[in-house]
Amino acid sequence: MTKPRRKVLAVASGGGHWKQLMLLRTTLEEYDVRFATTEAEIARQRGITDVDTLPDCNQNRPIRPALCGIVALWVVLKHRPHVVLSTGAAPGFFCLMAGR
Image 1 (tube, helix red, strand yellow):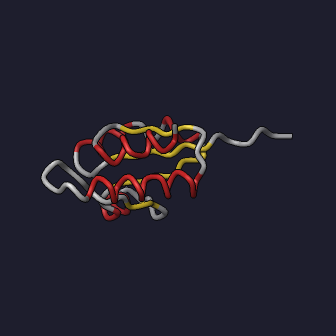
Image 2 (cartoon, rainbow, N blue to C red):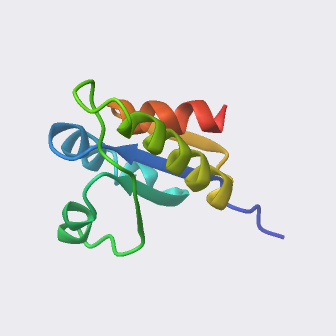
């Protein structure tokens, strides 16, 4: 009987954080990986069609972090990952906290 693959939720906002996460993509191939980002189009450019979208947020938009936190909780509950991996920014932080 084969052992089930561990589930990983890989999260990054768009831009440099996403590029850093993509550098880890080949390492993650042995896992059941789900991706989440603030810009679904950048995921599709890399051939990732099943991506969860999180609201982008920063200190200049005070309500958006609360919304991002709620969506992050939903994404974690939906996928129930064993591991949450993020290369940075607030959406990744909220997913890490929800996974905790």
